[in-house]
Image (cartoon, rainbow, N blue to C red; front, side):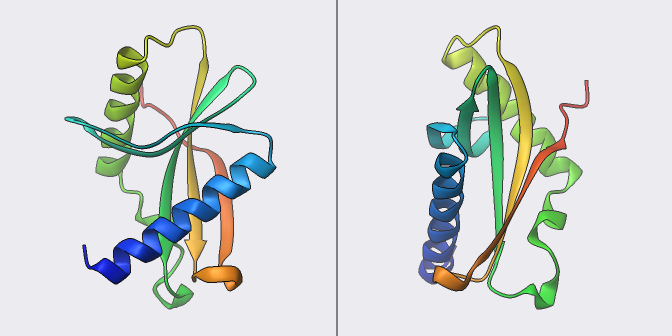
Amino acid sequence: MRTGAREAGDQAEEAVVRYLIQQGYEVRSRNFTCRDGELDVVAERGQTLCFVEVRMRSTAAWGDPSHTVSGAKQRRVVKAALRYLFVNRIVGKMIRFDVASVVGSGPNASLEYIPDAFDAGM
């Protein structure tokens, strides 16, 4: 990924983390990487553990970034989430797969948070 694109992605992820904290979530992990894939943000509120896929675009001209979460991407996120649960020995939590859609950058960026955007398909 180009340096500018990486920086924009990091800014989008930071905006999502700020949003989650404002909403009362505790951010447990960022950029968890394993052989099965990557989790952008893992956040918890109450008994629910949320695996958040962050998508961003610099402009809305190309459509809503949340629409880029393909079935293949969902499967990779689910596999990475299962690995995260196993590695961290987490049991007894409800889990949810959310998508955060960020358009633009900086203070003028718009953020849409979609809880329960997809399921594990099981």
